[in-house]
Image (cartoon, rainbow, N blue to C red; front, side, top):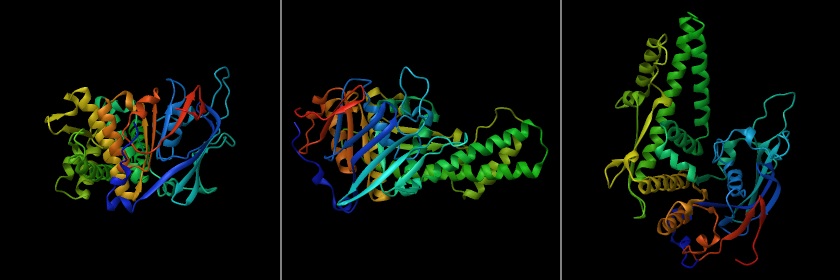
Length: 398
């Protein structure tokens, strides 16, 4: 029963923030969608249909407004529409959004054009038809999401937690991903010099100094971001979600304790010089940092928590990130919830929805059963779309 409203519970601080809504989506040649055009007339949207019907593909298209590879972390070659019976495909794809900000509308587009002379085709962004940088898009709209696959962030390897946090940081500072890519390139260059037994000390020293500077900058960015997220997660607004504490640990993190960044850079540069000839000995840098997550009430780290506690920790992280986005950018994020209702009981799903209303501008939810959403305690009227075999219809009667 969609009855009692929560949007009016926004405090005065929130009232001054921007709420952006997607009012139209046009998708061309993306995933399972050859060509669709959807008009969105409600604040919140529910996509229902059987598994494999194309619901997540639509959310993924929206997620590409954010930095990185979207909610599936897919490579660009998997994005173009393909016919099952054909091995050939058109590599071009495009997604066009109409974003409403009060009475004002803006057109935002992203996609890839076909290669020219076999050159690499980068992702393009446009605002109102003009080529733009991703930074400019992020100044207009922010995206956050929660999917079942994200449970692996708690249970999986450290690399997943690092990627998860780096993606969130990039939502506030897109240059963070650029630093990580530059770091990978420098490590490759250093490895090639060592492998070829190049004895140019000055060349190696320059590369190692730059590696050290970028590494410390990445870790400082992680620490600053995590400190802000930790403050939010340590003091949850809703009793259904636990107090959580988070902390990065690693060699550079230790060097930074009570010391300036320059000290950590010197320590890492010295370390890299010492291990040049030691195979597989590098255990220092952003790719070796570990994130520790504590469930406060139980006192246990996340890997020892129950499955239910782990899910609630993840939800707490996602909600805290939405609050941080709205605080930092003064823009409420659009929140994508993929099949979340199937992985939370009704009370926790209601609690998630209530919290999301207070820190999101528009919520997109998917599920196999529309009745799950009709039971939500909410006074508004979401817009329902039925999806089957990537054919989208808007039911006349629910």
